[in-house]
Length: 224
Length: 152
Image (cartoon, rainbow over all chains, first blue to last red; front, side, top):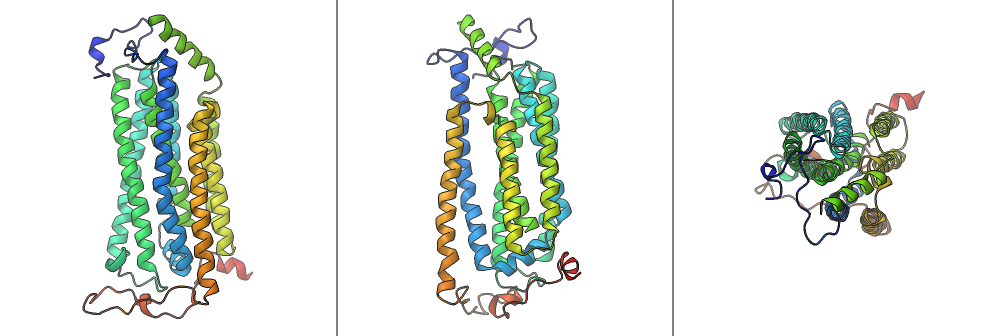
């Protein structure tokens, strides 16, 4: 296991020695560039995963414009905006954590990651409140729909799009929080240094992607 | 081995010399301002298509800021930029052609949406939305938050 920190020594600067470089890389910089590139490739596929959902949104919006307008007005602007601010701020703290880890300030990075994880949890709680309201109202997808305030055709279709897009996004928030927890633990063990910080950077990139998806979902679902 | 590791670290420091908490914080401020801007714009009395266009423009701006500065693409290797820009390019291709199809198809055939199927009451005894089967078109634009403003 690469991260078995016990075998590695503490350097005078106050962080653990980087793990041994895999033999097929010439330098640590090569290694980090490869890890970063791999993450970007993965994020490219994530963009295409969400592309399908956004495409569904636009197609069904074209078919049922009135229902999408009515249903959008029934979402809570307050909770939606709060969640946007929460995610943007957590992106800031994650980027700060990356900066600190890269400069060997592992403890700072740990606290920043902890704050980010808590904001992610806050996001999920707010999402839970919103889902609960929808279940109570009967504003549900497909044949479970029984919300009398949406009279235009296509209400059930809007809630298919709503629950699948925000649901897939919430799943990504959960995965992102798990990744941040994993790197936060490693920050606490002072594993990161200017020579080795890729896990913080890549977990951060994933978290920023989650933020990025929400930046599109928020106006499309809540505002328009 | 130890010496190469150190060299790599220094090269990385040079490449990332320009980024720091100050710039990240400024970026965050810009994103918050844009969030309130998109919220404010959404309350203006405008046709819905203008709202959609404005919201998408502001979102694209916000996403660009996140990608360039929080995700460091501004300071990153060109190869990472190509990957991400390419994925958005293909997203654009997908969106453009599908929407071009969907947006023109029903206008030409003089019926905006396909007729809804007759729902069998035994299959769906309850919970059918009142609007699904038969609702007069054009009863939208209810008392939105902005209609009052528009009247003045």
